[in-house]
Image 1: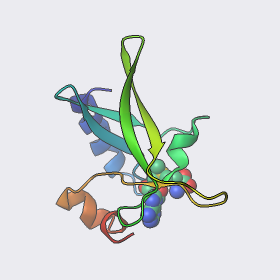
Image 2 (image 1 turned 90 degrees about the vertical axis):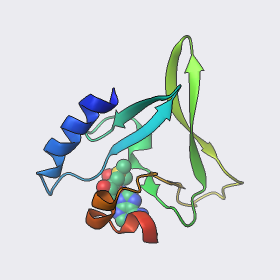
Image 3 (image 1 turned 180 degrees about the vertical axis):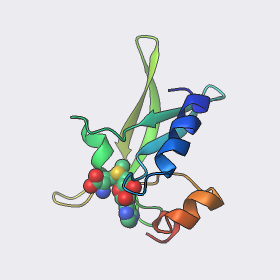
Image 4 (image 1 turned 60 degrees about the vertical axis):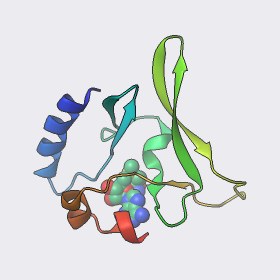
Length: 105
Ligand SMILES: C[S@@+](CC[C@H](N)C(=O)[O-])C[C@H]1O[C@@H](n2cnc3c(N)ncnc32)[C@H](O)[C@@H]1O
């Protein structure tokens, strides 16, 4: 979804302590976008945790048939049974204050 729409929804989520951070913000072609994976779905990507210190995946935007998609790519060889982790990327002071694990895991 577009950034402006996502920021409104993010604000609504922030009023509910039961809702975690399942929104991923990214840029593509100089425009800001967001994937909101908050609602339960069959997509497994929404279950992957964050790490800035030891991520083994990274996000990448790919164009398929004229539309863009966010995919996760291995940064290195990943052993069977190893937890998949990527950097959620959010470094805003407000988000870090609520989710200190963004900078220390
Ligand atoms: C996209 S979900 C990841 C899947 C989630 N752990 C689950 O079981 O549904 C993001 C949420 O997982 C938790 N999370 C992800 N990475 C974390 C980390 N490194 N340390 C603590 N909590 C984390 C936070 O509650 C965050 O809001």
